[in-house]
Length: 165
Image 1: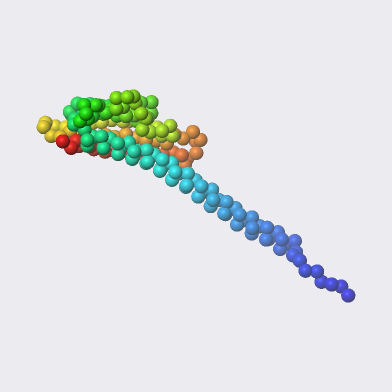
Image 2: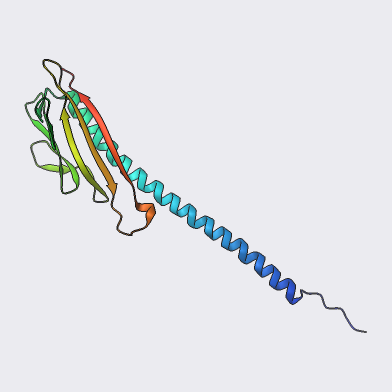
């Protein structure tokens, strides 16, 4: 008597392999897209956090200052100088692609090497006997050394500060 062997035919095996390969391809494509989106979100977060740090410091210093020294009233310039109650000056400027602050003991970079700053400008809106008001704007871009599109991100930032006398 001949026994019947259980198993898969060659057609069934090829069909199962094709289905599994298709599923793995779809899942890997999804994972690649998820990783790219995660990288893009990390880039945006990095740029926004550095901008928020710069904006917060400019606003805090400006609100506690006694005067805006540079730029002069009605002018726009690449350097922003506040005179503080202690008669110390605080200077914000852009140097070598970084936004820096100098409070008398040397310039300190407020942005790191992963972010490039451009277009830093301050517009002194002070008119007559009003409190000093200044508008600051700058652009931050993520430094893309890889050439991959998810590392491309540039954003303009603007704030206004009025001295509280």
